[in-house]
Length: 243
Image (cartoon, rainbow, N blue to C red; front, side, top):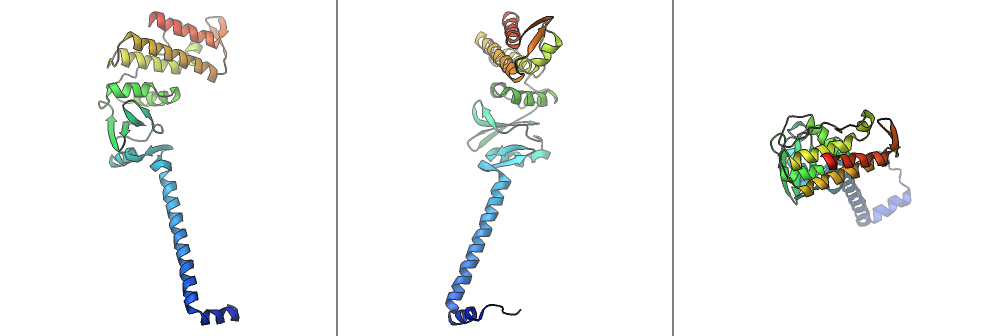
């Protein structure tokens, strides 16, 4: 290869071999550091923030990911994740999967496989306290699988309510049924009057939130048009009176 460097540069390099060597070493060091930075950035991007890995569009983090990977990841018994990590009762966090849940406390993990591996005192309140949309995701995944300890059945918004009202309030009714059938019956996690009141009050919160999300529509209740909030209160009063 021909040397196209200017004569002045060649003369400087010829007179200053030590300087040239130092310059070359500096350039190589900078390039190496740059490559290491790029590799580190790529590793971080692959794992996600906070030691998380993205699997099927959701984060699986820290010791939960390690345990999940040991069990075979998406092709193992837990399958794909259903949500990002969420707060849990009796643990730092919980990650829900198609085939169960993994609770994490520090570096310790506890796998609750379904069916049969649930711990009602932990699983029931943890699932029940999820945001309503998240609860519905987990509930629908569990209800579609084999029966376990927890009860996922529902009869919808039972009562003398028209189909359009049942459709509007379907998700609040799912959580209300889960609460009654697991806290008060089924595994009977907390079969007390105080718990029943708390479940009914959460039902009202969910009903009102649904009205807000739906844009506060007018509701046709057996031929009587009423604001959504009034329909929500009617539903609440009915469960308080009749359960």
